[in-house]
Image (cartoon, rainbow, N blue to C red; front, side, top):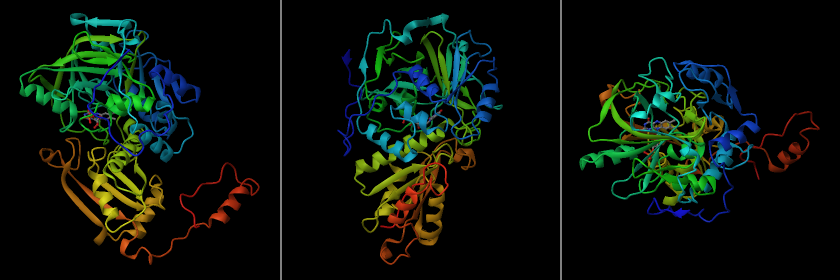
Amino acid sequence: MEEMSVSPGAPASAERGASPPSSGPRDLRDWIGRVEAIGQLKRITEEVGRDEEMGAITYLAHQTIGAPALLFERVKGSPRGFRSLWNPLGSSVDRFALAIGEPAGLSVVELIRACRTKFANPIPPVVVEGEGSPVNENHLRDDKVDIRDFPAARHWPRDGGEYIGTCDAIITRDPDGGWLNVGCYRQMVQGKREVGLYLSPGKDARLHIERYWSRNEPCEVVCCWGIDPALFIAASQTFPKTVSELDFVGGMLGRPVELVKGEATSLLYPARAEIAVEGVIPPNSQKLEGPFGEFTGYYGRPEDYAFLVQVRAVHYRDNPILTHALMADYPANECALLYSVARSARVWSDLDRVGVPGIKGVYAHPAAAGGFAMTIVSLEQRYAGHAPQALALAGQVPGGAYFSKWIIAVDDDVDPSNINQVLWAMSTRCNPAEDIDILRQTWSTWLDPTQNPPEERPYGSKALINACMEHRYLKQFSRRTRLRRSVYESVAARWTELGFDGAPPKPWALDD
Ligand SMILES: Cc1cc2nc3c(=O)[nH]c(=O)nc-3n(C[C@H](O)[C@H](O)[C@H](O)COP(=O)(O)O)c2cc1C
């Protein structure tokens, strides 16, 4: 094994050097085994169609929070053995926990804390021998390539085509710094050897392509279409632009990601991916793409030009599994729980990095446009202006700036993951005339349906809502009702004796 460096520097953090992270699954198949063992995988053995049918089944099956991931084992139009996994994480805290080597049974806030610790302990990838690696069990090269064999699908009735990359990881190399970026970006099938790549303004791969093109050079790309959830989680988060997401996958798994050298490009790809595709995007290579039923629950922008990848080689495992992420209203949206955990952890890590003290918790609510739109920060107010400072930063740090519209600060006696508590704080501690600020012309996307006419996009705005007790009158602020700790403990000890089932609820805050 050869140690490799794909990022110039890892982030400093108070949590660096915390206890060694537990070990996550080796690959997608290992994770599927762990998930099946806790009853959270449903295998569908009946043959299903690519045209809307898998999308419809997933949408309906995922109306229940915590519904199992769906593994379609026979898909029309694909060779026998080619499978398709939909909404791997879904709305299940347990499946996310297993993806990063944590046990099932954690609360969402405990999982966010674990994720934050792992983000603070990145581990760079290693390069391993390509021959004999699982991803290299099969190859298609040059004119033998036909990506249409893989079970791509039209998710929604008005999608512009079949999507092959939704739960994916796209690898590009920063043309100046040399590190490898990994992003999750949608990909529509455009032909036997051609696939679209939709990139919102400001996304790293887009910046890479623009820089290569400005030098009249093609941009090399690896598209991983069947991936383990830890890679998917890292690919979906905004990490600093000067660091490779692969380091954070290693941090989450507790071991380095194994990469193999590409044969058709100078890039590397994961040795245990299900499907890895090498290609190039020559200067000005674009084609009409979309629309696509998006994370907002709307078809984002109408059909428009998107980057076009020319595929040179395809590498895949025996009986490959293509991973799909359905975009929809919650809870059927694959982004939702993913963002409520990983984005919360990212925002929290960023607040740590800039040194905002007293943060008790961060939570991106999953029902707010796939977890993108609302960030709630719980903090212990320590000085004048502390809550407004946390609000402005939580709305603008790299991990939380994109799309977010509602940033809410609550005191440390409020559980940010409990929307009832948050609404209570907004209703009793926020004086809208005084406590709401607006940030304008912020980082948004062509997919935001509220920006009209569509040419107005991608600029957005954010409301910063201070739902903390007024700092000036902290000492005089009306005292809230909460249970005396000693009384809570005695009632909790008698819970079963009193005739109640299960464990007693644990209030976030008690009266000491
Ligand atoms: C399932 C899923 C699909 C996504 N699709 C896209 C997409 O098509 N285009 C895009 O720009 N961002 C998309 N995103 C958001 C990006 O993955 C995210 O912003 C990430 O930070 C991008 O990586 P980067 O920061 O390295 O650019 C998607 C996220 C998820 C979870």
